[in-house]
Length: 209
Image (cartoon, rainbow, N blue to C red):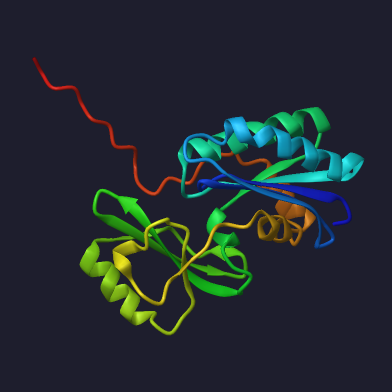
C-alpha cells in the first residue's frame, strides 16, 4: 500500500495519532487525558491530516478493549474524516498494537473482580477474551511464565510480576493495517465499528420505593 494510513488510538488515557506510509512514520503525536480525549484530539488530528496530505488512503481505529468513551470518540472522528476524504475506515483491536513481537499474551482488568487474557499472534488476537477470577489469573500466569506478557492498565493486575506495562501504539496499529490485502480491507471496511466489550453492560436497577 503506497498511500498514507492514519491511525487513531484512544482506548487508554494516553491518546495517540500516527500517519504511516510504506512503514515510514510521517507524523506521530501523543497526549494524556483522564476524562475525555475530545478536547485534545482535534489539534493534533489536523496536523496528522496535513502530514497525510492528499495521499490519505485508509483510516484505522483502535477498538479497545479499554475506554468506551475514548474509542467512541476515535470512531466518530474517523467516520467524519472518511466521509469528507472519501477513504475507507476499519477497526482493529488495540491489544494487537502493544508490541512489535509476533507472539505475546495480554492481561487486563475486566472490573468487578474479573480479569481478561488473550494471545496475540502476528497482529491478531486469537479467539475471544478469556475471563478469570484472582485464583484463575494467577494459575494462568504460571503456565505462561516464560512467555512475553503485557498490560495497558495503569495498575498492574494483582501486582503480578513478569508483565510489562505498555500503551497501545498508533504507529504499530497503522503498520498492521498496511499489511492487509485489498480483499481483507474491503471486508473490514464493511464491518460496523464498535468498541470491543469485555463483558455485557452492567446496569444498576433503581431501588423500588
